[in-house]
Amino acid sequence: MNTTPNSARPSLSTVEVSIPGHPYPVVIGPGARRRFVSYLAPFHLNRTVWITDRNVAGLWGDEIRSLSGTAAPDLVVLPAGEEQKRLATVEDLCRRFVQLGVERHDTLVACGGGVIGDVVGFAAACYLRGVNFVQLPTTLLAMVDSSVGGKTGVDLPEGKNLVGAFHQPRFVLADPDFLATLPERELRSGLAEVIKTALISGPKLFTELRSFVKRHPDLQGPDLAGLIESCVDFKAGVVEKDEREGGLRRILNFGHTVGHALECLGQYRTLKHGEAVLWGLSAALDLSVRRAGLDPRLETDIQAFLAPFLTAIPPLEFDSGEVLDLLARDKKVRRKVVQFVLLRGVGLPVVTPLADPQILIAALDHLRDRMRAGAAPEGEDREIRD
Ligand SMILES: NC(=O)c1ccc[n+]([C@@H]2O[C@H](COP(=O)([O-])OP(=O)(O)OC[C@H]3O[C@@H](n4cnc5c(N)ncnc54)[C@H](O)[C@@H]3O)[C@@H](O)[C@H]2O)c1
Ligand SMILES: [Zn+2]
Image 1 (cartoon, protein in one colour):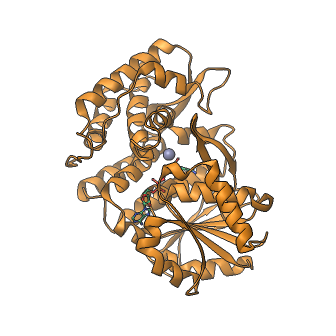
Image 2 (tube, helix red, strand yellow):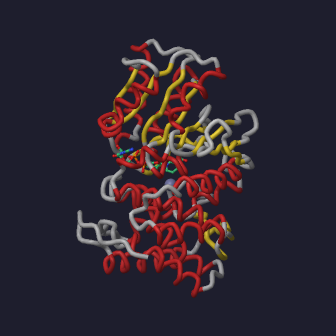
């Protein structure tokens, strides 16, 4: 982690992710995408093959052609959506690479949201036992979180991200210009990862976030680049100490244990990843009061900040026992005990084993009641206010 203003373009900053053996820069700011060719050059990489989804191709296809430096780039366009994050897509992709003659020293360019980044990263880890890839994230979620840190993979019907690999990109260009076309629901979903990062990193980022939301209820604004940089900087600091999630990196899963279970229950369609994480954060805060000594007044304050975002999420009916079964399949389970990331305070995450199903059931029932009381009618978004 080492943030520097980018001298070539003052509005850009660079966070160096100093993972031993695989260091790489994350360039952040409007116009960062245009640095593609110059960042590629030092690697003496061969050919590039671009992979994106239909939505991004429709909106940004001309830009992709311009960035690739050719009118007819090797471009693979996948259908959009979390349903594509499965093994069958990886097989299809790898077979396309064979047809395109992709070789070991070629580079895959993942241009899209977290789904494209995770699938392409995993294909890059597996194809020919590993090829280079780079990330051009186009959603807020991918810019602040999924494009950095090298976690790649796909879902199984049995659970989220159950198959994957650690494979670091060669560089990441996080350009907020892409967000101009992102629907507000997707922006709010991405904001969930910003909120997660703020809560585990400390009051400074949490205050920055709250003031951003107050100033920009539509979540668009030039200072978004600063928030992205703060999140990337924090994540870089964590993953460079613990690339493979032996310890510290587990804190990045705050809100994700229940979140992944809800996402799976909705068959990856009802809730977007960030929406499931938002409810997961809310449940983790509740559990933090019950089990980690979080001050209930602080919890109330944070829940009040979350509330307008939560009420905008489509409802999901669930049975707490069903969620409990899904939690048992979580990757963080050790000897059948779910390991939760809880908060003792803002910036004070603790990994806590929760063996007592009664506490979990109580928190899940509470969550379900709040979802029923607060969720917006399906398809209808409520106004977001601070
Ligand atoms: N690898 C990691 O460390 C990590 C971290 C967090 C989340 N994730 C994963 O990320 C995924 C979620 O990512 P996501 O929220 O970006 O989802 P996504 O990739 O499905 O993108 C969301 C939607 O936005 C569209 N889109 C993308 N860019 C756009 C743009 N600029 N303008 C208009 N539309 C655009 C996409 O087509 C899609 O419909 C989940 O699978 C989650 O598990 C991974
Ligand atoms: Zn996430």
